[in-house]
Image (tube, rainbow, N blue to C red; front, side, top):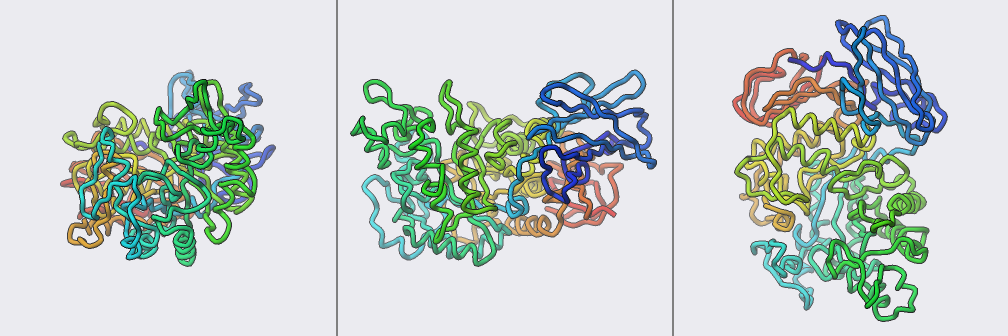
Length: 600
């Protein structure tokens, strides 16, 4: 049974007019027009917009168009982030239409729709495709062979097995020697995948293969080729018209960082206030790891060094010759937070102010592996890595029950759930995050911190369905290097396997072709980048949805297993299929498949 007859609204251009032009944020005091779509056969008699002025609910009536389908009304953008929902009346029956869907009872404001008066993320980010690289494992240039292995490292050959168990002390020390010139030499592969934003995990020196324990922020690790190699990579990326993002740990440094060494050895030094020292020389850390001392953003001197102003770490790397286009902020959810101290929003605003002072169209994305609600709808992070609102629901729907993949952030494996649970989870997260934060967030099937999607789902066919969801749901796709050729991994450290450039016969070339095709279709159809999301069908093994935009609407149908035809879907022309299937929308399938159709 189709869901297209249900009342619908989202924050996309079809349903919200800011009055300032397409895809332009309103400003405080503006009137915005809201639209709700209902089926002509729906006996709804009245629709009221409920918003809040200074936390007091007020109601505004909506008017129905003569076509019997559309309702419209206006509200004032009274607050920097203004909440609203809709009250639908059918005689004595009432329903709320919220950001999380239709409900028959009163619910908290957390699920309200949101309209933000803050400037949006830059266009290049919302329209782009991100390719994540873990430098030590991506590619080695010839220059890497001449570099001595540091004393802290466990050297490895490119085809050696990755040491990945968390309890094994060699796990963070195993060094394969990938470098930045190796990445520069393989940008043609990034182009083949279809990405146009290169994001690397940290490149500052650190006594580990992941480099999240930086020993300085003033230079690039010589093991990666140093400052010269980073400037060369940035120039090569920009010559292609692409963008490049850095990875910065504003939450902590390494215990060998020059600031911490000074702080630990000289209690009277200014750097002492950069950290949380306790009696006896003890100090706060990230999650109990002594090698990762936590930064104290209550200290003005630390903020000036790290996040505020033109002399800060944040600003320096956005200027020539490196010219980063923005930052991914590591553990953004913990930055500035410690017990009763909560300076996260202050830090986020400082990072964004500083980046935008250097580059007007800079991007700042926060890492959140759980709930980013409230951290991404203001003037700080533009969005977050959307694990909770995308990755975990998709994993749960597509997971192979026999998969050895380990969960990220929980003590037991992600459960296998049906399509109804998938849609409910996606709606709940879209509702609480809001349309804009959802659209700006990164759609991730996995990262250097999690199991690989191929291991989670167990087959190439289901992997391609997952990739189809990643490229067609609201949000910005982020591909972890190697997913496109079918690399595996049971947890984050195992997923950091080397790219087998010299063994192309081991690649899953069909999956690579699927990624390339999905990137092309996303780039060709604005509905996949800026369109709304309206659910059309849900059953245990299949879901379908529309991506609606004034320039055209696409229908996406995803199946995790073969099944019968899906009735009552709108007609359209086949644009892409991840497997051989009849071109008719909703046709029966013998196996997992995702199809995209352009509606007539």
